[in-house]
Image 1 (cartoon, rainbow, N blue to C red):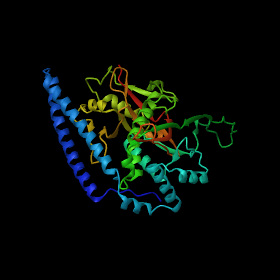
Image 2 (cartoon, one colour; image 1 turned 135 degrees about the vertical axis):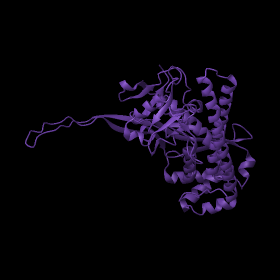
Image 3 (cartoon, rainbow, N blue to C red; image 1 turned 180 degrees about the vertical axis):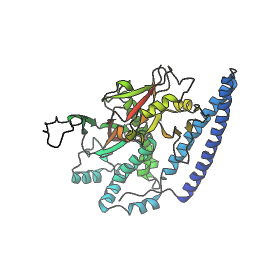
Length: 422
């Protein structure tokens, strides 16, 4: 059974109170932004644009971004379990199976004091291919699950993509480039033989990703610190940052291949193996008239079956530009989250922020739209390894933590791009 890590009621109450206040402040700022932006648009129509108004809009827009970031951090904090104490750790440990408890106890001894014989014996019995001391030892299953849960919460693409666990180094997925040939025939007409489907294969190799948190001997000796939680908290940011960059822009060399690294062609010329793009009609931006029309074209370039679960992916700078757009009736296309923990939306489709997406520039594909659950596949190889190193950076103890992850586009028809070109 998985270890249960639940924040204390006091911590939950405090964080939830901060969340409510932060969310209210965010909505107030958005109303101020709309008023300032309306003034800016009125001045543009009157051909009397005021630099101070422009600066005011940009300043409030930046404040909105900062508040959104603070809100996201508070939401993540609310989801995070506390480091815990000896009592809660003992209570959670009692829920484990005898084998899992034995592994957890041996793992804690190894992390805190470097005693590795118990772990070596356990993994020798299990005949684990990842238990060689030079390569590290496998962490307990509940720690691996906690790291995965945290990554799903803070790694933007992982949170919306299809994630599968594999036991080998590579996942090979066949797909049909063209369906089987079919045809209509009369009741007594001959049935000519049809050609078979044309099959090809996509391959996803799990590459090694590592983090190296450091601890002081006094922290490791402190019995009140939950070592499992500490490791998960330390590696989450490092793993999430590297994953996020690779899933967007990775070149596939010793890392996953990002969807932005695929060949981009105009939607009219789209073919399997490339991503289709819709042009805004204006180099480096949206058009001055009907700026929302390219967004509608982008949405409807996606087939109906993909649109049901589709969402936009862009960075914060692009979202700031989109936030200023209105439709012909004066309604803002961008809308704030409807509730705490929800996402902002654009034309009623959720927005996922991925800071590794490019900024708006001439010919840049700064915005993606699609069903990423069907369009992008992430593969995680089972097993998270750790190697204790008390020698390289005395007096600190380094922990070399590795996991293997891969990724790539699995359905080229499920993701479309917005290209800021004429």
